Image (cartoon, rainbow, N blue to C red; front, side, top):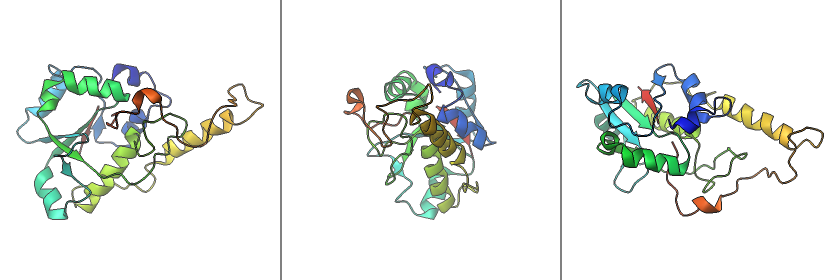
Length: 203
C-alpha cells in the first residue's frame, strides 16, 4: 500500500479489504525491492507468490478452468495487490524489482465500479475491495479459495451510501451541488486503465 493511501483510514478500500480478511496484511511503502517482509514471503520455498495486475500475457482467472487455476496457483499462494492511485501503483511496480519478477494474474472485468463518489479512469476500473472480491470469487470457482464473500462488499456499499446522503443533502455542510450519482473520469487518467492497487493477501 502506498503511504498516501495508508493515510486514508476512514475511506480507503484497502483498509476495508484488510478488515474483511483475517489472513491478509498491509505492507506500506513505495519501493519494495529491499522490504524485509515482502522478501521474507517471496523467498519462502513453501509459498507461491503472484501479482494481481492487468496485462495481455497474464494468467486470466476469468477464462481458466478449475484444474488450470489449481495447478497454476499451487498449494500455498500469496497474492500481492498494489494499492494506491493509478500513477502511484505504476511507480511502485516500476521501482520494486522483486515484484516485477512475479507471475501475474488478472481477470476480465464485466461489472462497473460502485465507487461513484470517486472519479475513475473508466467505469470498469474497480477499487481495491471490488477487485479482491472479484478475484476471491474466481478462486472459489477454481476450488482454490473457500472464503465466504456474501457480505464482503457490505462495508464498502454502506460507506458509499452514507457519503452520498451527506453530499446530496442541501442542509448538510458537505453538500455538493456538482456531485453526480454516476461514475466520471479524470482527464489526466483517461489514457491508462491500469489497476490502482499493495496489499498482501495470503490464501
